[in-house]
Image 1 (cartoon, one colour):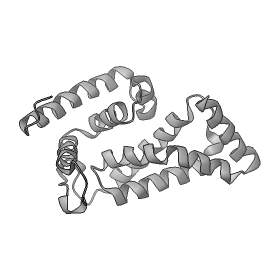
Image 2: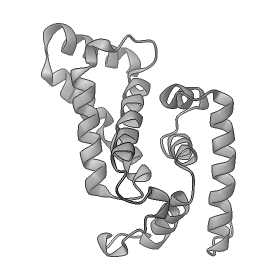
Image 3: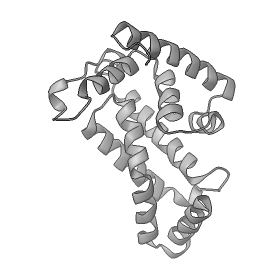
Image 4: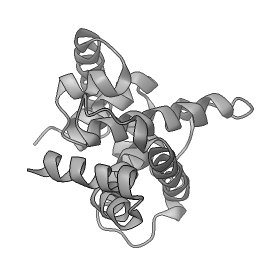
Length: 181
């Protein structure tokens, strides 16, 4: 039902230039897309908002290229994935995300700030492909087949990145006092 509704909304935008229909799609997917970017940027809210906005702009301008070969959400995550990697490629003058420190002062009065910071620190130690697969699988609940479509990787490669990423993240958290309970 949800996919059919998405297709209907896309058709309204493409055929009738109905911007309200696109607004409905944005409202439906802005939280998941923003959350994806939050995990990829290790908690940088401002950057996540900028990247999410760019994703929706690209989706709107390219909506007529949506061919319904996959779900709208998969197509949108593919755009988000490309937006993020375009950002990373364009950011050659600064150090990579793996070396980036999380600034605790940016987090205001949140419960479990320490746990969140540890998760982001753990994610920062993963290779970008591992972090992407972990984020899409565990935090966005995408199945391996959809992650393969989003990333353009074979399903076996996605499984390998998930396995290695999970092991690295687990080891990091265990070393930092999380016993797995």
